Length: 274
Figure 1 (cartoon, rainbow, N blue to C red):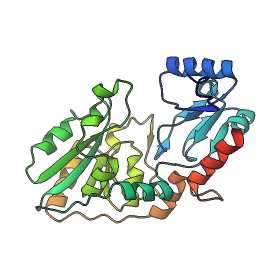
Figure 2: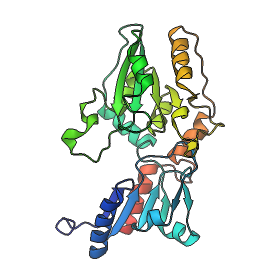
Figure 3: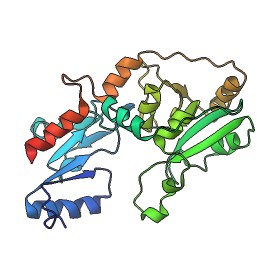
Figure 4: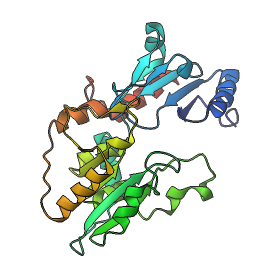
């Protein structure tokens, strides 16, 4: 397939199963073309997990989206393989493009609170079967819309996200409040000045925490606190002020580099290696 289509490079989500990465790596190596690993999303919290040399042994380059992502590898590998190019998904250029595509307007038809829930796949920390979601579903003063993670290893017909009523930009535009865990969609929500309830209590301490100097989300430390905050919103007693929003977005999108146009960085990178 690669030879038939005269492929110059192959770019792949680095979170794919190792067996798939190895097969693709062997094919690229045989054809002497570059294999480029791209992380599935921008890092949004202070993670305690490091990428190691073993994680990068199959790729020619690794395109990191921001400097919250951590590496514990020799300096020579850092220089030869790692490229910090920023987040193409959440940069201003791409969000402006999405705005032209998704023009649907959402008007409030009642006094209910619109909650947009970004869930994780079944078996992970915030699936659609989470007990908090079950409790919120019972509340008649709330409108809930769920967005499944738009990524799966199954055949398309088996993917839950294809049955979602709204896609990611639409559900963020529709919602009054976004509820999720360690999802990078938080970046788009913050950019659109949405209130985000970040369920930190569902994230293991060994994985990481929100950076406390950036008050861009409401950190939720328990299910009871989540339900309490929802009640405050319903009774017009909730207040939250964003703090250091610009600095946070600059960090996670990768605009803290000298050249701010993220998509141009990617275009330049690929032009240089092809």
